[in-house]
Image (cartoon, rainbow, N blue to C red; front, side, top):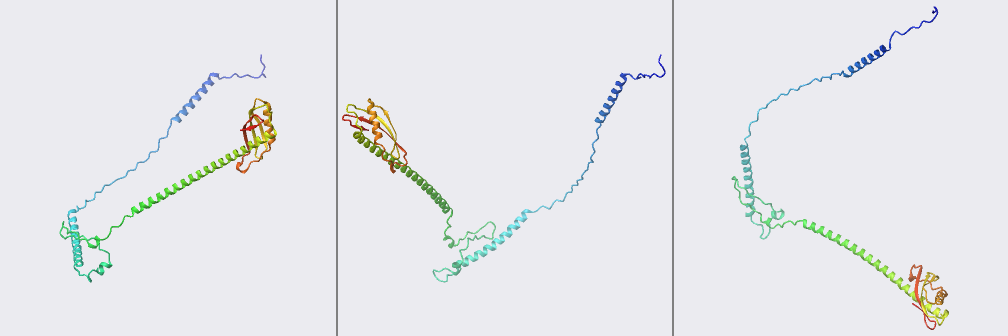
Length: 295
């Protein structure tokens, strides 16, 4: 049995499904309100239309112009003017033709002082008829003016000819300079080759003389060999070698000793130009009597 001072426990009256039902109703109502607001559109402002009244006013037509009468009046006025001018010109021409000359063979002062009068056409006063044209005899003797266009064409043609001649002259000068340079180069090359040939010939005579005198070969040996030597610009022997050996090694040694013993050789002269070294390859022949021949 519980006492009076015990705490009282209250059980909840609501149930769980009622709470969920309330939440569902609230969500549905909010969605309905949002959908109504979204579907509600404001009506556009109506623009008041304005109208313009146009009134067409017709003007009375002008009176027709009588073109025939105007043309006829104009033609009559022109005929009167031409008639008066023609009469005046005819009178002046007759007076000039019938007036006597002051002196025989001389022109009147008016004709001598003033230029020839232009061609005058005399027109009769009647409509559609004209008198023959009178031409002043002085006008028939006036020479026709020369056309300046041929002179312009001739000047242009002369200018083109001058330009062509100048271009041809420049081209010929260039070709002549090129040919002269080539000829000068060929001449220098030929001079250097001639100088090399002279140096090799002098070297060959020096070797033959020196070898036959100071380095004779054994009398019982003969044969030939090929030797290559390189001589510097100062005449010093830079290299000597046997390119093709003889059947006897003694002959090879004699040939090399001869080349080395004859050094140094004369230095290069100006005819050889800037040549730094000269390579000489010759065939040595040892014959009877210890004679050395170099080719």
